[in-house]
Image 1 (tube, one colour):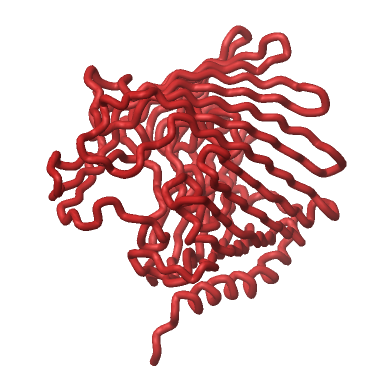
Image 2 (cartoon, rainbow, N blue to C red):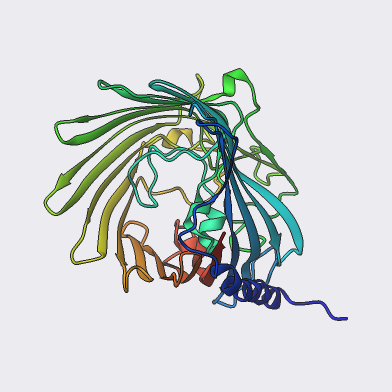
Length: 439
């Protein structure tokens, strides 16, 4: 018997979901999640629901990644999600578990993914959670300043649904609410890095490919390396205002090489980082105006700056979102990074062209709901005049029933060079299809 190609496997994954969806979609769309409760006037509750997701994307450029995995296929997988939530009768204790069991048709392997899993206790104005949680701070659309928590860029660029862009952190979170001030505090003892696109499936250049001895060094789990994050917020004179503080590490690795003309070893490491920021939001005209800023202090976690670490920088963002006509939303953003000039701290052996001191990006997202929200076309465009590159993501969502949804789209990159943020992915333009059946 012959083996099935990755492209055929991807199509087979999507086909299975398409065949299964009409059967599952016939269930009552108005039915509530299944609940089991104990007897008595005040009942403990257990809610279980989930979905089946088929996700596939195919590269349209004909390029092959250095790792050679998948060929034209960037993504081909089936995921089974289960969400289990339990609440005590008093409402003071909550348990939530969200997990995926998935099959990767490219590698022909099964895996599991615990998205969230925590226990929470509420007492009056205080809410305490312990375990894996997905935390989202800030106001940007795909531009993150004070949202310093881990992202899965591999998922985003390969065409998975947007919810998979965020990764959970394992920690302790406390929320305090009052009429004067609201606080959100998070302690994370175990570091989680961003998941970056892999050279196995993306046509990315590998730094120093001739260096045989390559390793990665992540912060160890101990008290001194515990990440701490704080958000204070309240409503003042029509403004929603927040201030942020973070002490931890950069989520993307820096590269340290041995100081020789022909390096023999390379270490990817995560330098210390402190972030101080603020944001505000207010209704303006027919829409909502948002602004956010943050200072990334690359010297903020440790007494001595590592010359291989990124320069400190300011990040600023301005957003305006409005509805130009019925069932349509337009969001416009202006984003900038201004790096501190630490040219004297540069390593003796360069790891690539030095980044520009200023990087600016303009973006627009347009979304339209059609036929009672059955159809949902949208497009996101980001253009950087400083890098001279562009990212475009059009999508068409179709939701014929409450249980069945399909999303077809494209991920497109272009750039003058292959060293800018968007330009480095221009060989990985792809088309993607997601089929989801809820139950």
